[in-house]
Image (cartoon, rainbow, N blue to C red):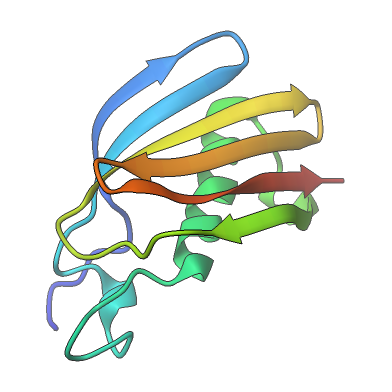
Length: 116
């Protein structure tokens, strides 16, 4: 898989005072599909959580170096190449954010991320 990318394509961004919703197209040449799994690629949960930390940093100035933990992490429906996801990220307080991934296929993942 040459010419891999590491992020979904951002199709739209809706910012509110304490939340942001991103629409992400999951490309077929996403790096994280390599070996996960060859005959039926699935987006690993670790990639989804990595994106949450990155977007919390980008939209809310959360310091990725201050990442502490995920709480209440749930993965409900697998994400396949070509899906269009909505990531809703909401600031609960200065160090805590809730997130959820959903699409036309249903709710894929949710939880909270904590920073120091």
